[in-house]
Amino acid sequence: MASDPALRRLTRDLTEPEPIPEAGIARAVELMRSGRLFRYGEMGADQADTALLEQEFAAFTGRKYCVAVNSGGCALFLALKVAVVQPGEPVLVNGFTLAPVPGAILHAAARPVVVEVGRDYVIDAEDLRRKARASGAKVLLLSHMRGHIADMDAVMAVADDCGLAVIEDCAHAICASWRGRAIGTFGLAAAFSAQTYKHLNAGEGGFLVLDDEAMAARAILHSGSYMLHGQHLSAPPAESLEAASGTTPNFSLRMTALAAAILRPQLAELPRRVARWNAIHDRIASGLRRSQHIHVPARGGGQSFSATSIQFSLLDFAPDEMRTILDHARDRGLPIKWFGAERQAGFTSAPRHWTYAGPQGPLDATHRVLAGLCDIRTPVALTDDDCDLIADIVRDGVEFAVATRAAAGRAGSGPEPETARKHGKGGMR
Image (tube, rainbow, N blue to C red; front, top):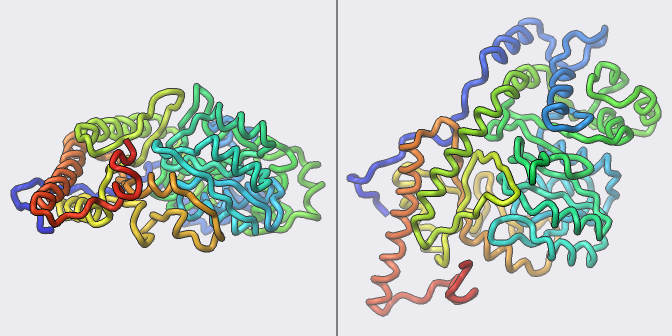
């Protein structure tokens, strides 16, 4: 549909990150001039950027050990390996997440078992209990997708009852907490990401954090330390590493010194950035909630979040109506990701797209939620005016779709929307 030229367009690039801090740039240039970009020094520690970052990140997240690797998905794979997940073993994972999460399970030669999510996008604890018992799984890979934090008391109670080891995917949850306890400290291990669009930006990078000495030793050796693990500052006692050195393969997953140099100054900036991100989220959410056709999950209760994006559900719209709304927004400069699209696009996918994960059985609740779930990236540079315009553009698109449906109904030519026929006219409400 053509956009009304009288309507304001969003001119902000939602993919634009903040600049790297000057201290990171200066250290990166120094490293490039030296040529010493590998994290280990054969003649000793030529530089300690990665080792220092691991030490600092472990302290920042409240864990004993940290291993820096080349991506967040790689950190998830590494977590599964050090948890000794066996080939073919079922691993539980919530249905609202991104493709690298089931991908990490398959990378570890295990088998994803998808658990339902509810209308607020977090894992359904009762379905988790059912799937754990039915599958015999002993591991839950819990994705805090887009920073939405489940009731961790309920999740951990199920984990305790069912004997589940929990690995946390914290790619979107740095600085988040549940009832004052940091996300990333509930499970056996946790993985974080330093991809450009996350809270920390190295272009690509990841962290595995954990407390167990034997697991940390294997993680360092798996990551590719050769026999230079003495250069790690965030490491278990040397005897733990020596004990595992002959039986732990090298997977070459290391973070480079250059990535670490870029990341270290960013840690100090996180509190300021998270405060602004959350203010942006709340302002857009307030504007979206002015429409009765838009559901924005509440982010209160026990969770403290850190939102680099905003998610909302458009209620009771058929696929063609969803496309109309998204086209309207795109014409006005606002790109919106849609998890209910027939085909996966960009970074967005859903369990029905993961044919590589094998048959999953019915996931009606998850598909119903994802059918209307939309996602907008929210760079920290957004102004209050930008936030208000984003909400206005979404509401205008929704009202256009509603008006078009009403006009078609009056003409007697509009069928009842597919989602309403399938799920009842009340939809998600």
